[in-house]
Image (cartoon, rainbow, N blue to C red; front, side):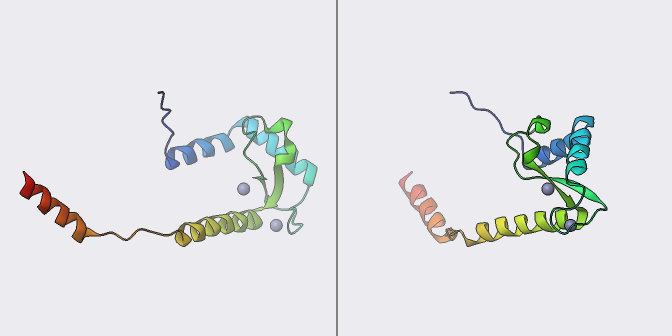
Length: 115
Ligand SMILES: [Zn+2]
Ligand SMILES: [Zn+2]
C-alpha cells in the first residue's frame, strides 16, 4: 500500500500564498478583473481581488475563467469569513464523544492486576 503524505494546513496555506504571488496567477487575476471590471457583489470598482468559485482547475485557471469571480477587498474578506464561520458551525454541531478518564484509569488498573 502506498500512502501519500498530505502537507499540513499551514504548509498548504504557505504554498497557496506563493501561488497567488506568481506571475501566472497575477496574469489570470488581471484577466478576470478585466472581464468583470467590478465587484460582482456590490459593484465597487476599487481594490478588486479575484475569488475562486472552485479550486478544481488550480494551476490552469486561464482555461477555466468561469471558476473565478471578481470581488472587492471587503466583499472578499466577508465572503471568506462567512465560509469559515459556516465551517466552524458545522464542526461545533458535530457530536463529540465525551472524554472518560475514569474508564481509562479503571482499565489501566485492571491491566496492572492481570499482569
Ligand atoms: Zn464588493
Ligand atoms: Zn476568495
